[in-house]
Length: 347
Image (cartoon, rainbow, N blue to C red):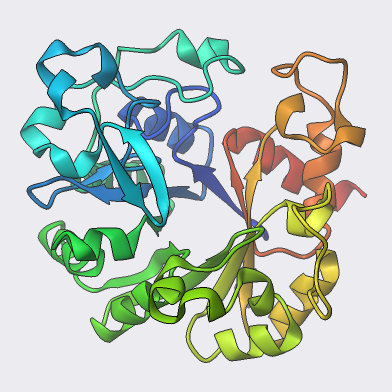
């Protein structure tokens, strides 16, 4: 009997069920599993002692209670990350033992007040903790749940002596994941980091993240003002070139459904279904981030009322994105992603 192909697009829980619980907490990931997420996406940043932790950024004042902790007041500092000057508290200035004393807070508290009601309840977790949760959830559910690991600020951390590819390989090995495998997807805004992961023999899909504007910071470091920009990769020639290095691309949803991105797209830059078709023609998978139901994140025509946190026509927008033919969607509410995909057969 022929094997039925897996449903598409893949529904990926963005930092866990981050629409319902503070992101990157054990509670958010456990809820994502319970809601049927087919994969989960953690952001990886290191501590001073080389432990990979799950945080949206290495600057953690917006996702933890660190600013309220007098014992860490002196750690507040200003530094440059990927060409931008930031002030706050940074994971690379803490050991894991210190970070483990902090508690997570909702990053979008003004919009997601329900999730913010859980502020202070959950500790931070490490990448290795998520791997344990993921294996247990796969065993208990009888379905293989995938992992989409996003590497943040690879060049920045390499300069600090914290190479993400090396730390990641060590964590996989320690957790019994060996050299990765079919359930692993690795993604980064810096293509040279993806090259290094391949050179280390880590098996899994390698996905290049395309921002709406600008250029990859690793290429800026190497080439300065002449660095190839993200838009240059979003052309037929750019996608064909990427196919020699990576297995997929991931784009912000504005490249697929609008509203207009910052600045007009240049000649040959593809958007919408044309972009997806061209990527597929080059042999690349296509993913998109982040599908959210609140008015604040929907295209203007899909909004209902004026409250930023109210849910608008999320189903219409999710389906419009799915209709472009993407292979995977990142969602803060896994149940909504599955609902939108499940309705395809009804049309």
